[in-house]
Image (cartoon, rainbow, N blue to C red; front, side, top):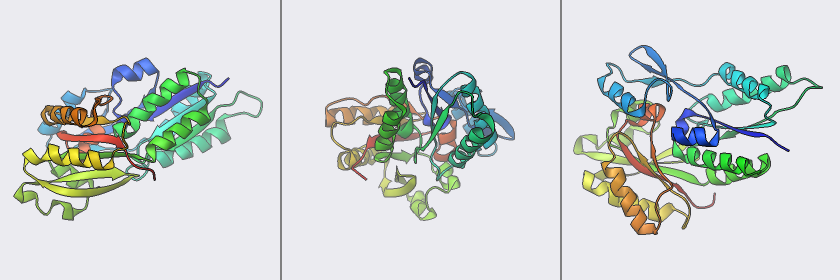
Length: 290
């Protein structure tokens, strides 16, 4: 019988109580604020980090998880007796962490496993996205493991979700998105006119769906997007940051539109906030077949 451990990284933005309840192992990204290095989730709460961002002299930055530290976690899990580790990473288009995990898995196989000793298989999955887009299915994967699903069944589920999942969001402050380089400079041509980009990320690719003029138009535009792209009767999430006003309005609007509430409201952590700003509103959905 397989003994399966679910491993991921902190950009999944899984609530801490769910991390503990489901036994998920989360590696925390390094975050640097004014020259001081911290670890997301460990050294501050989300609310504390939002204040740190506002008070920082320079914009905070994040770093990848190295192959060495990933290998050390693999060794730790091996010593605990797991037969399979399913490691879901941040998008490979936004971080070297996925490739570092592949490297660490190869090193583990070559240098740690012995011919006659116990085996542990490592399955590295590229989420191709961020925040709750992979946080939600990682939690479902952990539930499936608890209920006796095989590693192949769990991996099939993860790929089926991640190949179709999308996040649509509007950053209320644009300087962080501009700095991240994940959206083209042309997207900010109307910034002085009060235009905000509605950004969609699918399969690791960020695109600006449209530019929204005025805060009052943000929720109607997001709702129209959800109606257009979401597969009916599938789970969805609300994405929020420091200000919950618009996310709560969006939550109510989507609940009324689709007839059922979101799975939960995901609050972005430090790694996402460094690249999107801490004031965002959006949703995660399962889109059409790819």
